[in-house]
Length: 253
Ligand SMILES: [Zn+2]
Image 1 (cartoon, rainbow, N blue to C red):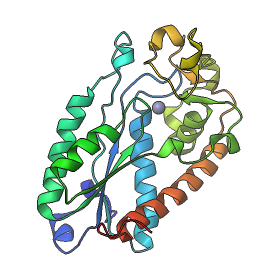
Image 2 (image 1 turned 90 degrees about the horizontal axis):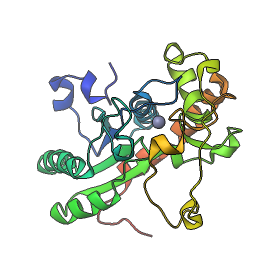
Image 3 (image 1 turned 120 degrees about the vertical axis):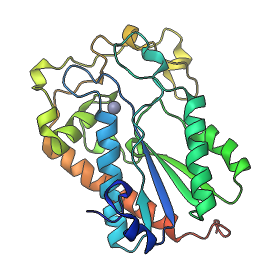
């Protein structure tokens, strides 16, 4: 039983505790090349949020991890069987309900802990921030928090060397042999601006990649995954801790 994981604890423990920060991990359920499970983003969200919280909790942070939301925005993959799409408007409705509970009960800080590139919570949280002015609402993309090139040889953003190495470290029994994986080759846009970070349009997934992966996974190892996992959870633990410590009425220096 981990006292910072809500789904594992009892009302007795909750009643005797106080919380500064609630963390809501948010995943997606989608194909990840031929070798990783559909739940990759959910497993990553669960595990990385929990381990970061453990480190923060042991350093004194009053953090609580809410159960992971399993479905994300997958509007570009409507033709890939069992990729489960949840629209941003539905995510906004869910967040509204979660925030309403926290606000009513005096837990005034929420971090949406995003694990899926298709999810974007910034605009939703801005809108809900007006509705719940006493709440401090933040989001983060853990997968952008470190420079991946320091850990992995191949670039990518979906079922790539990073994700494959992480799942090899955390859930080795869920990774198929890498010789079954596709090469994760990805096409680029004919409109050059869309290949740069200042412009964007949604990728039509099954036209962009053959195997649903983006990034070559074949140099992945569990050791690379462990090193990245240790460092990313160190960094996020500090983030959790600072969010717990900060006074909402005195956020800037
Ligand atoms: Zn993923």
